[in-house]
Image 1 (spheres, each protein chain N blue to C red):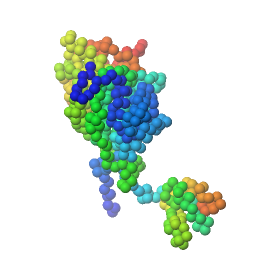
Image 2: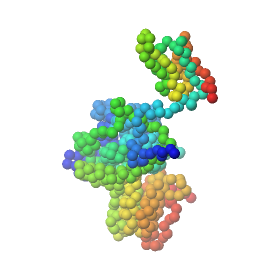
Image 3: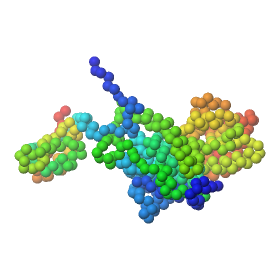
Image 4: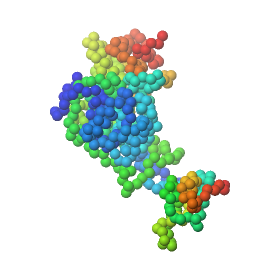
Length: 105
Length: 401
């Protein structure tokens, strides 16, 4: 049997609904998506424009293993991407490394 | 007549608006965001002049609407600033959704509010419909009878708001107090500064080393607890209000409580009202007392939190009471102040006095000594068993038929 979770009382909760920062990571909001960005690793030049524009934090970046560039795009966090398409739109037109596709339900 | 009470105070001739602006200059908040609206325009206009003249270091944000004014004030408060605004009537109405957010986030914002009628029809004059409508918003509400009280209430409100973690509005009756000049005592800047102290919030968004989330979504499992906290904060604020009033008396000499009692000790008939009509009522009481009629007055200063038990106790021994509301609930029944007064009496077992409700002065409609005298004369007859107390809301000085 699942143990009853203790939920804080009014006396225990901080006033005004203050919550510690960064809790959005715990909530998987990806299923809200109706279209999804598909990232093409071979076309990507690692300019990070998509990472800057993403209104969530759904563009995953990491140190370039080849050591040529600093940080590069390594993928998309589908647990949090809501499919707004801004990354695809902002990806330089000559590159077009991100395309939007219908989400398969 | 205002007498100098504080040894270093200075008697000046100023309007309610000028006194509120003066208080704001002395309080010297970090941020003021406001949009002009009659009859509160002067408060922020005078204050913005103080800013422009370098008399106060406040960041003044001229916004494009009252909704934005309250939003910017909330944002400043969340960032950790002592933040204030001022408004009236339609502007206050436009702030509506943000009023609830300020209270829900428990931000000690102080608002200078000038009571004015709400449209339609358009009317710029004084009644208390605007703030009475927000009586459930979670804000502390402090009403003022004259410019001196408006000034004193503003100074106290900063400490009350910050200790209670509740936004607080201080109001005056539109034009009657906001624009009428009266003698008032201004205290030296340094004494006000010392009284209000500095604002040190527990958490502030500008403290980037301790980030936090504010305004998150709460569903069935958490929302109720936070709304309970807000309601409890109002109950807890009563002690804070009295403590601040006590400190204020010690520092500046003027005495304040939840309400002012005028000749209530032996009163057989009483009026309960709020704001500028109290002055007229006192003049009527003086006349009636000369004729041997034991009339008294309770002038409510703190409407939120409502001093229910205290008022019930003070009305327990009267034979008849009339609650004069300068706002109508349009509820099919009674107006706001009456509803609270009577429920307070009933809950405290005070069922002896007959209680009547009168709505007066909407849209700035005149209320003079004769109108109030008529109410007392009727109460006197009710008290003596010569007349029945009205069971419905009555109206003063309005053409009905």
